[in-house]
Length: 208
Length: 192
Image (cartoon, each protein chain N blue to C red):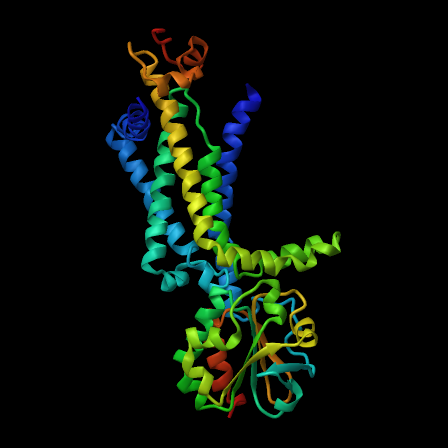
């Protein structure tokens, strides 16, 4: 029973991706988005070593570990965007919170760790709240020494966003099938409702 | 419905804008770093470097005692990755520095910037052990006075290039990114 549920959930993302990346165009688009984000992350992540400087120059500090991290984050983000776009186009909507938070969290350590952004921001806050004046460096210290965990949380959030979007897409597809699984029953989205389908220009789907 | 749609649109748009900003804005900082104005809010460049004490192996020294020779005063935190890379950059360019009169004073931020970390000896030994025995390099710690005078905004990685006459020629950050400026400072004959 338990194994079935786990298996069912593990298959959600591959199934949704098979539907989403069915056409050559969507595959090419997702590939392009992946490449763009891979380049962005490859330039942003080494900023930890450059004092916040980002650009082609930061590629000099790209380590194998940082490169893998950049590729993983870019892949998760590209796939999430592909699922979200497919969801929007089919009236399923998109679950954006996890992916967006993960994407933002993924770039924060590199940009905030050793650059002047945080000290200057804290200095601005300290003009109104003097007690906050000494917080900048300790926050940077925390970020610098917990970078690994922050990236871990960012990846978990991105996976969560990917999974959420995949479930939305599958809920639309499978709700019309004869035997929905438990995971598919858990989600009940507007995409299969007549009003939503009318809004997205589609014919209402057959109800269960 | 409208609120839901807005929420669905706002988050992706916000994230896209943030990512775009993150990519678009930093080249400006990069440019600033190249020109040595990465940390312009500290003691302003082209002003006189004030006397301030610092500690080397528990012994008090004063910046004033280095007047007459070019000095690079660099304040770091030992948990800071860009400082570690900067130290390695200086070690890689040791020959150039050793061939000049430049004195590089590397000081740990007062109380390590407010976050715990290894001491300077260990930090240097881990990243650039050769510098521990180089007479052109002084490894020490900030006093509260020097820290508040030379790093009022508490940057974790900031350095000053001070001319023999005591003028601050440049304030910048991350030597790994701006070493060309240090090189220029050395080569301009200010250090000879």
